[in-house]
Image (cartoon, rainbow, N blue to C red; front, side, top):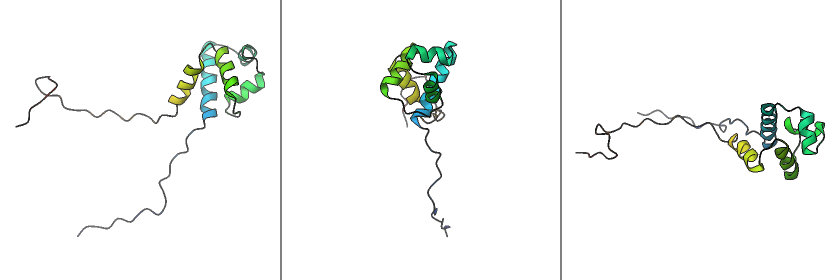
Length: 113
């Protein structure tokens, strides 16, 4: 006779998704460091205070699209490139590809008997 499996009493525990502002801040800081710019240099070029940029980088601010665009411009990147990088951070890690057997003939089709 088959065993009866108990139904889980609580929903599966899932890790909370990261916040957009935190991923944005991480990406801004990464790009600024990649360029070798100081916080003050980037803030001046963007027309924001160093304190505000610091809070953006730490994920403490929900900046407007205008502020994000200003900082992107100061980092010499487009808003599209910046937001695409941030969106990529929301993607779950890719699963390992499944290996498929190739036919011995190397062709794209195989016949079954």
